Image (cartoon, rainbow, N blue to C red; front, side, top):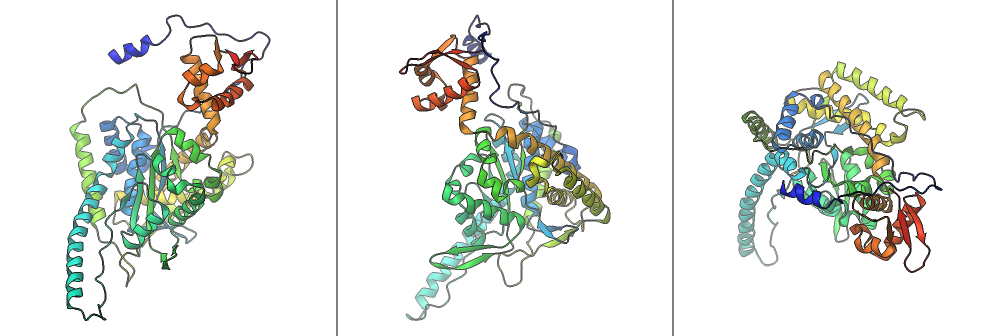
Amino acid sequence: MNILKKLLARVPAAPLPPFVPADREAPRPLVRCLPDALPFPILAVGRPAADVIAAIEEISQAPTALCAQSVIASAALALQGHADVVLPTHAVRPLSQNLISIAASGERKSTVDDLATRPIKVYQDRLRDQYAADMRICLKQERESRRAAVPDDAGEPAERPLFPNCLLQEPTFEALCRMLCDGQPSVGLFSDEGGRFLSGYSMKPEERLKTFAGLSKFWDGDAVTRERVKEPPSILAGKRVSVHLLVQPGVSSQFLGDATAMDQGILSRCLVSAPPSRIGSREFRPASDGARQILHDYERRLLEILSLPLSLRPGTRNELALRPLPLSAAAERAWIAFVGECERLMRPDGDYSDIRGLASKLGEHAARLAGVITLFSDFESGDVNAEAMDGGIALARFYALEAKRLFGAVALSVELQAAQRTLEWLQGRWDRRTISLVELYQRGPNAIRDKKSATRIARILEDHGWLVRASNRSRTPEWLVVR
């Protein structure tokens, strides 16, 4: 309550009345209003996963879609090393998922991610303990071999154990390839601070295309050739990578608006969600015993799946040979009808005409999601049943509508975003009718704390009618603020 009083004290006691110059047109909006997100179809994920999502939502009080994204990603990581879904076209595709969750700071992204990935972290800790023990034995054997060997005949070096990490946060693409070459064949690129990956070394101009192309190949299930100057080339086959990046809106807009990402096709391989905020509407309440029990059962179940031995190609240490998971006859009929629906909606006048890249892959997305739903509910299932396929299709439709909502509205230029924040600051925090250029960059938002950027932003606001030039002095221009 004290915090609220302090915030209210900053609001001017007598707000200025609206001001619009009589001889000018009404100002134009800087950006289109973002439509409201549709409710996440939680029942589409199947009852077992829906219960887990509801339990995490109850404990964290985070948006439903945020909890669902984390559960789907964690389940995909656990299952992708065991099976591939077989499409009616006879194409074999991984169960891996690329998920992008957009939420502002304070939406409890880290809490949700921690709850969903806890069993994976427990499994990784076990791998690390085993790795440390195996390394001690390996190093001891190497020392003994060196002492006993003839000087010119050191013998074959002991085989090193596989790297234990299956959760990676912000690797370069080269580091990811190295982990897959000498480590676990099934990994997840998961980060509750996805901006660190999207703004890191892998996203530098000279690395971006390689990173996008490589992640696309892993999503497709294709082999990736690893070429290095001092080593012979190696082929990474039988590897699986799922991605879940939780990012803030500003970072996501740069990614969704990245021309390289759009042209290369990585965006069509991503399922994006930006749920409505719950900040300000949450009240603390202890989690129920039922929610904690569901979460406990989920952790035990996922840990069991992760601990199952992986099927490997003969003669290899870490190249997966996955069992096929075909669609049942009823699931195949539903899939064919959905693919036809997507094709019709991609016509020039169709609902999917502006997201054709994603729409062309919605059938595959639906089948992959259905495969995850199937095996999460029944790991021993021999095919994807009709109910799971219906769920996968419902999820695919939801993500298609999210893409239509977000790709155009969120993918704004950096300057337009700064102009929108400046306009909000002028209308909510600035208590005078006029503002000078100096006042704008000295007292305005952090994004325009220099003369050059403030001048560009003021020009945008002036062009849209939100600032009206009141002084033409070249050194200190001044504007009337339209409210």
